[in-house]
Image (cartoon, rainbow, N blue to C red; front, side, top):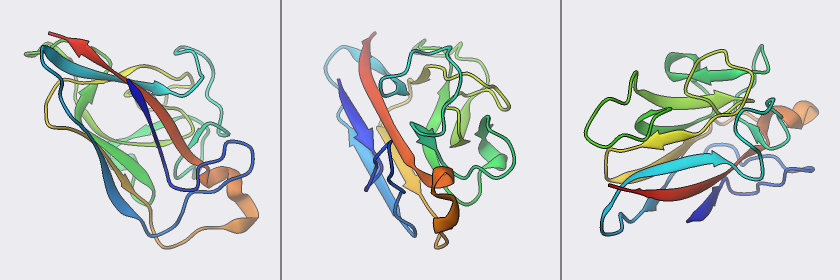
Length: 150
């Protein structure tokens, strides 16, 4: 179990740092096959909130994935909404941004995201621009993770 946060994350007033490229890696424990991620302190299925998760909010206050994420985003390779090692995970997603953490594009509620393809990592990518007049668009994120047994 643990937490991953963007540098400078502060849900109340912070903004993520611009021009960043880094990865947070999670060592796979014995007999553990998946990692389950969710937004820190938020019950999955509740309405999105840009104060606790916001990356590259351009037009809508919803979940954006893969090709919809080009400036600021996180990468959880081959992830989905199901924790089933060995397949059956449904459509796989790589990039996440917007104000809702959900592997389904356009969703308005946070969800659990699972990664069952080691090595386990979360890549963070932010571009060089950061609009200080609209800091809510770039708070960054805090994700809680837990390893799931095989």
